Picture 1: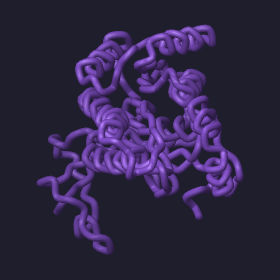
Picture 2: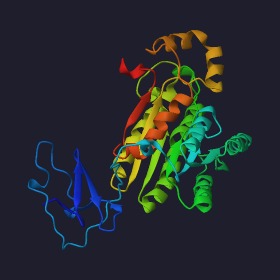
Picture 3: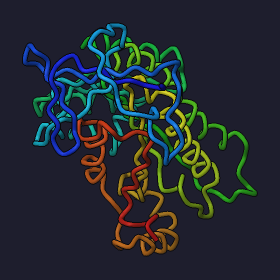
Picture 4: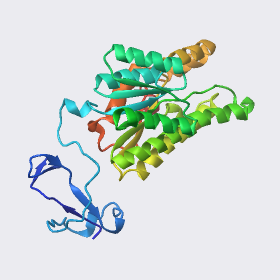
Length: 326
């Protein structure tokens, strides 16, 4: 029927988790074959219509490219040996993520159009003992994005993680919002993100594994007044994340997004100063009655990129003090 599962060595099953122990003693992956690429049957039916068959003689099955976590422990949340590109890496959020990744054992490439900010961020990471690469880049420039991916692969020989944190917004009434400003926000927040996903995704698919996390926003999940382009763009980020997650689900590449609430950063502080009444009311709508900090995004980000999230893709994780739970 649609699929069979062959194990080339004895199995050990713990609490429903199947661990394939190769005769050499190393842990290998379960080998799956989807006959004629038949999709899973509807819910409530038996997958394959019968028991899983064990066929030692069938040697044409492809190796599973989805490494699954088969044990629990601190390594579930480590990024040792992994290489990450962080767009918007010179900003408050991107640089906080970079510091967290370094602490978790990763190497990071800082990509941002602020060249001076990139160099300063890389210098701070190096002083802290981290291994970092400076990549001044405008994510809307396709050739430049190609170059940043190539430079990362040339330096470290692999690309495991892409964090798309580049983005911006501009508040204003919809009736007065000009087309150029609207398009500029979409060009960075959506088109630039897509270019990074597409180009990095090719390398990850070829390697058979990877994790992409896009910075969305609760603005992509709710509506409020005075920010039409940003809200629309973050809604697009949410759907782009889901589309890529489904399309790449069988390749070993996972795609998720984090939807922060309002995060205290220099740019937000300037907006608060301009519209204190609006932001006071917005803060009051957060059940925790405060805004978040860049550092509060780091833990969820590490989780989505680490082995702990090996079965998580297409998820939009709200980190918002409970805002969208209402």
